[in-house]
Amino acid sequence: MLATVARNSQAIREESAAMKPFGELDDPRRRVLIQALTVGLFSSAGDAVAQIFGSAPGKLPAGQSFHRVSGRVLVNNREATLQTPVKVGDTLETASNAEAVFVVAEDAFVLRGASRMVIETPPPQSGLASSLRLVTGKLLSVFGRGRPTRIATATATVGIRGTGVYTESDPEQTYFCTCYGVADIAASNDPQSRETVAASHHDRPLYILAKEASGKSIRRAPFINHTDQELMLIETLVGRTPPFVFPLDDYSAPRRDY
Image (cartoon, rainbow, N blue to C red; front, side, top):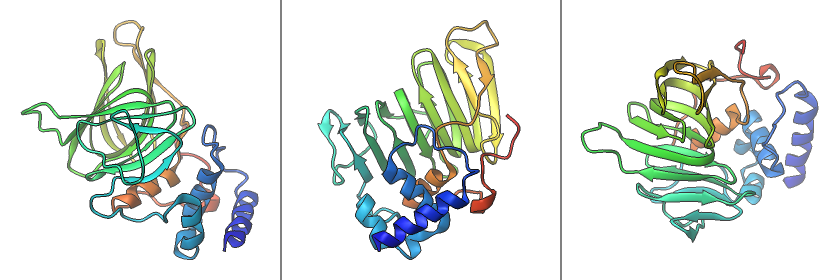
């Protein structure tokens, strides 16, 4: 079965040479996962994929948080396993070569290497279902529909609802892509820099910068470092699908002029 997956993966690479390069998605197992998701191999090769990833993607059982732990992942300063629960109030950290794929309630995430995030308790009377702080690093997220959420970074605060988003954070700037849904984006230190993005397919990625003139802290950005197939994976973990479907031979990047 593994040999069959390998042959199929080689065929996919040959047929999809025009696809956007994976960029920083350099984990060979993740490449196989993305390829398998693209052509629906989980329906016919679930056992083989499970050998590679620990389990075939599907809605996680009640009470289970992690789908995948690769490398050193900490939850509240303790090394995580597939049995570790993740809940509101927890802090997650990944080593430089690590990655965590996990679920909290109706939300699902891919936390990449060298990242630190805090799942905060929403302020009273805020109406928020969840509140996240990405202190540093890279995070792909999908959220349940109709559940207001806030993401905070060093340079930005974003209000979202029923959205898929990708975020990169460091002290000087935030990269934020509204993969689908609506996001209200504000620069933390510049009240004049605000923008609402309504996206159906990565329509307007943005940089939110720390040291710009008033009203100029938000700038257009390219589409980088995340894929539709990864969004498919984490939506699957919470029993949903993304709001877009694309054929393998037609997908080369978001269909917008950046």
